[in-house]
Length: 408
Image 1 (cartoon, rainbow, N blue to C red):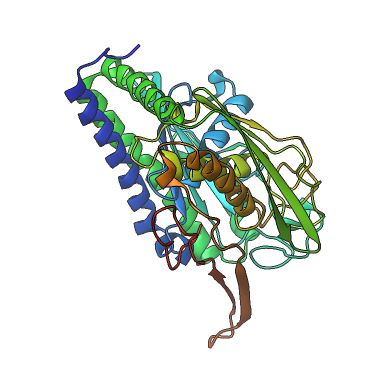
Image 2 (tube, rainbow, N blue to C red):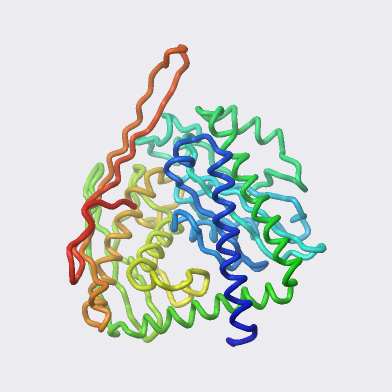
C-alpha cells in the first residue's frame, strides 16, 4: 500500500530521521572517551517504529543496524508494555540477544509523545573491556562465562534517572572505568538527543504523519529490494570456505534465488568450536545483511523492508550459530567474517548469471591481527590497549580491480 502520504513530506521526514540518527551518533562520539568510539567510530544508531521495525538502519557501522534490531526485540520480549515507561532505557550485551559479541553494549530507549509510544532509539558501541579473564577479549576462553559480563536486557535508566547501583557495579567489573563510564553515559546522552529531536519533529508534523511515513519508508524499500532480487537468475548457488584457529572448520552456504526471495542455507557448516571463533546467529545474520547491502542494494534506503525478502537457515550449534556455553568473543572478526566471505561467493555466483554481473566480487582477504598490550605507565598505573589490524586487499570486481585495502 504505497502512496498514503505525499512524496515531498515523506522525503523531508525520511532525511530528517537520518539526520537524527547521525546526530545521536555524534553526541556519543563527543561525550565518550575510548578510542574505539571517538576515533574508530565503532558504533551504531537505529531509529525504529513503535513495533520495533527499523526505519533508520545504523547511520554508523552498518552491522550494528541488524544487531540493534535483535536487541530491541529482546527488550520487548523481556519487558511487558506495562513495565516500559517514558524516560526508561534498557541495556544488553548478550550475543544471543543480538550483540556481535559481549564487548558490544547497546542502550535502547522508548520514545513517548503525550503518553503514546511512537518510536524507539538504539545505540550500540564496542567497549574496551567487559571483565573477561584477560583484558578485552579472552583468546583462550573455552566457556562464554570466561569472556566477561553478560547482561540480559535490563533497565539502566528508570524514568529519566540513571540506576547508580548498576553503574557502580559496571565500573567495578571493567578494567578501564575512567573511559567506560563516559562511554556508557555517552550512549545515554545519544538516546536523549535523538528523543528530543524526534519529539520536535512530531510537534511539527504530527503522530499520524510520522506513522504513515514509517510505513511508507519500509514498504518502498521492500518493493525496491524485491525488484533488484528479481534481476538475479533463479537457482541454487553453493560455496564452501574454511576457517583456521585451533583446527580447520568448514563453512558451507547455499543461496536459493526464488523469484523475489532469497534463502541463505548454512546447513553442513561444522559444529561449534570450543574457542572464541564462533558466531551467534544475530552476528552471522548481521554480517550477511551487511554484505547483501553492499553487493545488491547500496543505492537504496536501508531499513526493515530491505530484509523482508531474506530468509536464513542456520542449524543450531555450528560455528555460525553457536549456543552457550560456547565462547564467541571473536565472532565479529572470525566466524562472522567468514560468513560474510562465503555469502559474498554465492551472491557473486548469482550475479554473474544476471544482467547485474558487474556487481560480482571475488573474495576479500580474510584474517585479523588482534594484539593486546598491557603494562604500567609513567604514573605506575596499569594500562592496556589494543591493536586491531583488519585491513586486507579487496577481491577483484567483475569489471575492475579490487580495492588495495579494506576492512570489516
